[in-house]
Amino acid sequence: MTLESKTYLVVLFAIVSAIFFNVSTPLYMDESYYWLWSKHLSLSYYDHPYMIAYFIKLCTLFGDDIWMIRTVNLISFSGAAFFIFKTADYLFDRRSALYAVILFILSPAVTLGLTITTPDSPLILFWSASLYFAAKAFFDKRINDYLIAGLMGGFALSSKYTAILLLASYFLFLAIKTPREWMTSRPYLALLAGIIAFLPVIFWNIDNDFISFAFQYHHGHSSGENRLHLMDDLAFLGGMAGMFNPLFFLLLISLFTRKESYSDPKQLFVILPALLTILFFLYKGIYKKMELNWVAPAFVSAGIAVAYLISRQNLTKTFYAGVILSLILIGVIRYPLVFGLEGKHNPQNRLFGYEELAHHLQGYPPQPIFADHLTLASSLTYSLRKEVWVPIPTRKSQFDWWQKGMDFKTQSGIFVSRYDRANELKAFWKHVELDEVYTARKKGFKDKSFYIYQVSN
Image 1: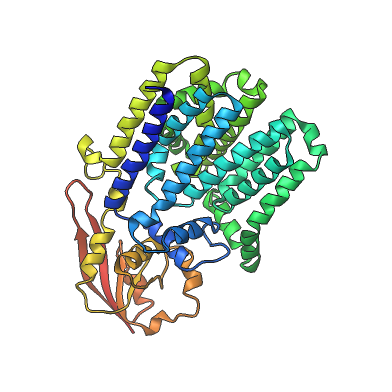
Image 2: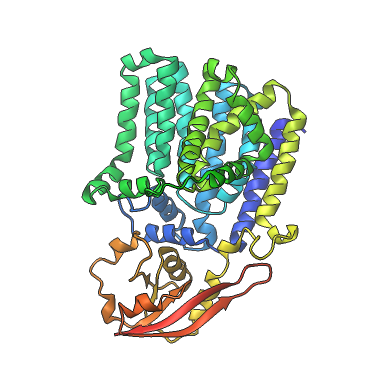
């Protein structure tokens, strides 16, 4: 069987297995929140830019089933795989391109991405698309490629602000390798195209005192504490290796240390976005705990660089060893109980408990339901198909916009929380009574308890 045939089979396996897994896996809390965005379309949102809301809207035109919401991921990562192939094939050779697709689609990060619908899905699609057209723009000097690269970069930035790192890598590449290019109009026209795509986010922030920009800055920035998070940062580096594939990550680190990675313009082009993104979040991780999905876009060009190294040095055995390791990691992620990961060690614990809670609440008489956190309210809204509000939020969210003008103190109903909120509730409602502590239980999963109060004034 040729490498090309194997690549088609691997991509087919990844997509089909994801479809079956997605149908049987409950919606993650954050997915419910972004699904709610699609019911309240806007130029942008408090937590992230607009793109994920419109992707979900398009995929749920004919229903709100879980598999429809997660179609966003299938489209995004299939499209990203296509652009990764095109980029590697354009810059290097077909063999590297096929390796790059397999490496990408079987990575643990993409395995998670094919299921959990977040802004990272459209981000990685447009990041990959922009990378391809930027490669053609920088090496062929065609204005059309510049414009499309800029537009795709703007759409990436309209998916998640992390895309600014991709655009920064373009700036560095031109400054290092072709500084004379800044004397032409091409980079500036590309920048203009990106700004046009990003305009809805700019307008929304102008109308809302730039609150989304401020939130994301503080979200990934230390809050003034002096403690260094060195152990957390080390764990973050280890998690990064696990999400990419530990074996391939070692090859990537070796590429970062090689002189040819920086002297060869084509290698530098794919190394820079990965290196800049990884170093940025490692640095930030010294001062505040980072999330692994934040660094995931780095794996797009990182995979191309590693694939070229494997092809150039004929590391076939290493490649297939990495593929086997990826398949094992996919099994652990999707079927942890088979690997003995139970209770607190089960990586799927976050998916469990919210459907069970919603089913339990259906046994209560019809009445308003409130929650203390955006994700709990979103999960219940999706499962119950009724509005669940957040009158006493644990943090600011898009609910603050949706709830403007609502007077919850005049309403009575059920208040649900993961924690004991009695004292806070008594400052808001006169009558607060703990009805029960409901505990969702399922074999192999950690028990999840919810405090259910009756509240009224």
